[in-house]
Length: 386
Image 1 (cartoon, helix red, strand yellow):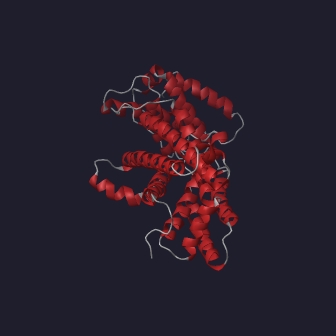
Image 2 (cartoon, rainbow, N blue to C red):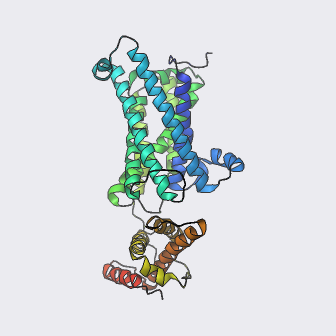
Image 3 (cartoon, helix red, strand yellow):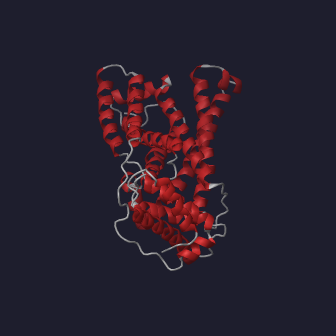
């Protein structure tokens, strides 16, 4: 059996790119979103033993470095594809506007390269926002804009790749042939479906969070149901390929179903617990002065804490996020690690103070809640720590 069943002259480059994108870039993206290490543990655990980083810091560096590699390989693949077409009998006009699957693949190449370029630009901006002390000369745009664009482009990228795989005849018929013949490359295809469905579910949840105003909350959606749905769907797909001609509409329906169900589950409202904070949290003595001196940043932290509390989020997630949020909002960045930790601790303390005051108010109904919350904001911003 030949190692590669396809006809690409540069198939090695293509498949290195696919494997890195699917099995490293998408799995680390899943972990970064829902903060559960199980999706990327196969790569973070061994690398954590030989590299000086660990935890989320290691994960971000893997995601960033692999993204740069995938982007570079994609540019190489796209340029090679266009070179081979142009060196033949086709002109650029024929390739892009001539109609047929060649033009479709040409536009897919252009769109994927453009989307990856945007993700690189705004992904680097996100890294700079989250790591303000980095000495590398990275550019930095506004944090919320960077995150919004990065997520929207991520969704568009997966949609184009899904169309490319499942709706271009010469591509999906090759996948089917490999699967029916049980070629080893079909294992990569099945893995791509599983991880791709999980990633599309992630992108769908991200998309529906935007109009709901939940894109920047600390709460992370559970996507584990997608894993079980994907496994069932892949089994059904494999069996159907062996017993009858493949229907690409059937596979497209599988992908959409696996993506939509977790997203719809995320729409189910959660009840607000009566007591988010289970115990009295200590408020540092310096907090009242910090709130007054940094009122704009403190107000953002207070507003976020109140909104997250109303959504029933876990108090630990709220406090941790507010530490990073308060740090990002500082006009003068910390000079060293010690000062950085102090700023983060201040943001956490403001959030803890707000949660304690919310607990004391015991707002269990919506009646009069808005008035009480407005009063609470004012008192906190006056520095009333006690």
